[in-house]
Length: 312
Image (cartoon, rainbow, N blue to C red; front, side, top):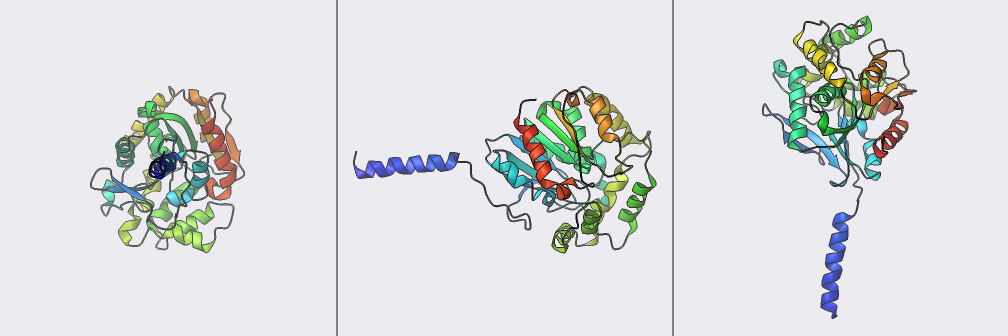
């Protein structure tokens, strides 16, 4: 074999190996340079990160109020190293996604539609889902309606409120703060909801997506979207979907913090009792406040790796 043929075969071999090799790209969560954008309806674009090998099993990480995909900066790269493809969208109105200037379209139903469209358009299947807070309250609706899309589900501080639950004064105070406080700060909320003290640089990053008054429409409205009356349209939808969730028999776990938050106390137990896939699973109460991603990123990451990697 002459040197030319050797060079050609070597080139093909190298390119093939390079294409199949599992490479870890350094992800910059502090800018939008590595984000992709998907138009998901109503002329709105949803920003998302898609990292890892496209042939690897999919993990979908969902954030909630008042944050963004930035919440997973200490978690996602480690999941990729375990040979997962990790997809992290910013909900509409948050992070680098579009922020509706018309607050009337910011509804529970629309957020469900937008995320459903996002999953459909990216052709995501066999999803390993971890969803937190509003990310879970939206995702659980999709799990109930389209269980065939999901392989395993883990949720944290997520529940489909039916409007008959007792809403504590502390949460109603937060609703009032979100709607009316002139100095509203996502960074401060993240700090208050974490046991650790967040550095000013991290709080600033959580504040960065919100510049103009209309940028705050979704983050200010989200807390008030939880139904508080059983006759509300969104409450009735959740009542029906909770019935469907009682048929979800794929592996399902809850990951809560151990602080005494009356809004969320016991909701994990209800999910464990009602969802067949939660039976005989290990559920978790971490030494953490509401934002477990900030308080216990390493422990949370290992829980997700173990849960998503093994046959349950």
